[in-house]
Length: 99
Image (cartoon, rainbow, N blue to C red; front, side, top):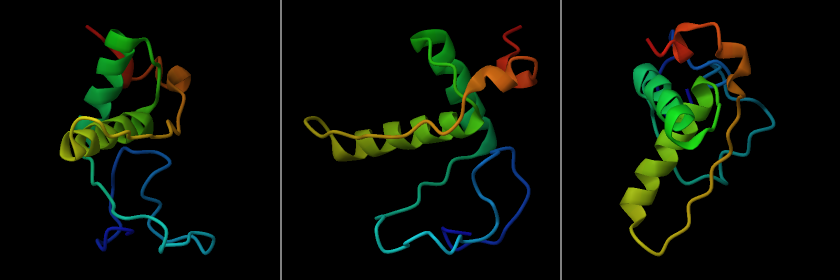
């Protein structure tokens, strides 16, 4: 909805609520980076394996978006992101099924 699309089904709990909260100042951010369900999940798995960061699906989306922005900006720039979810609740789900 923030990117101008219609609300729809997705696996990103905590993101894409389908409405714009009244407390959100839409004038303070520059862009919305769309991240697909599978990309977010794969990024969560990869950072858990490679970096020891146990985040949820929305954290995977945030990390992926930050990486894309860093690539766009190039060397010498700083990109900061917030990881909005802990992966502990996903340990018994397909997200962290490393078979």
